[in-house]
Length: 315
Image 1: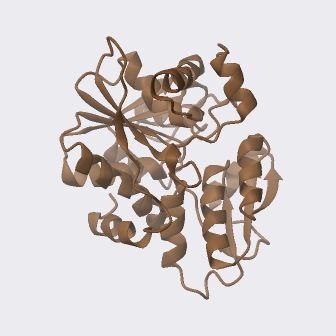
Image 2 (image 1 turned 90 degrees about the horizontal axis):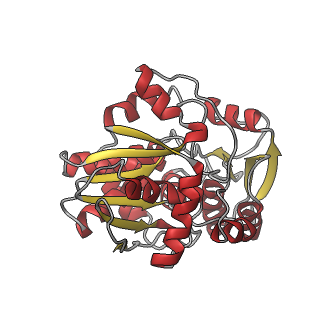
Image 3 (image 1 turned 45 degrees about the vertical axis):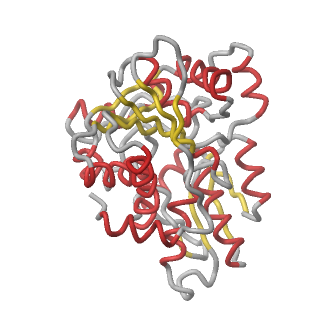
């Protein structure tokens, strides 16, 4: 568990970069629960990643970051690191999978980041080993970094301030850094709240791990839900997330697409695939009843893909 003191310190450190996002009720007739949306898509980079990236970079010394910043990301952490680098006047080098959506790549470049594409397996290996040979600069791990997770945990503090008694909090699961941060804050302050993760069924690595009792390979295929899901839980993250997560839900991609439409129609919220995972889980009833908070992690979706989904495509 990430210490509550680390999360509270991170909250002060990220002021001026990340904003406090609203928690709003999703009005859906005959919904199985009282559903609330934590709108991280409203951050300056349209993703929660600005929280963890800023905290990690600001904690590093000037010497450590003198040659610039490096990360591996499908797009959102890349933007957080590029944002922090631009604010400090230093370069940012971003390694992305060759499946990364153009909307996210364009956003990285607008922020001044240098994009280097890698085949998905090679890119994932960078995340597994936590470094890039031959790349100059401070490597900011997108997931398994205590400072990144502490920054992400500030979302949990805000949720409980706005809604002190949630029955469940649903968090999209990619590498586990968002889950570990938020769940640490929630469990420290309200242990009775159930922590649920949502992954695309096309890459439900955490669900496979919880079923096996250890990290296990899951069937994987790319989808428009590019910011979440994987073929396997990171070994370094397993002890932490397994102690914090109560339930892991694989969500069919078609249901995620339906949630993207629902958010646009009912709440006028634009969510990327990962951002729609939690609402998809909530409206399906899989997360139970009562007060259910859904973390809408980001809104960086290609407009062409959004248009297809709004017109009825299943993703």
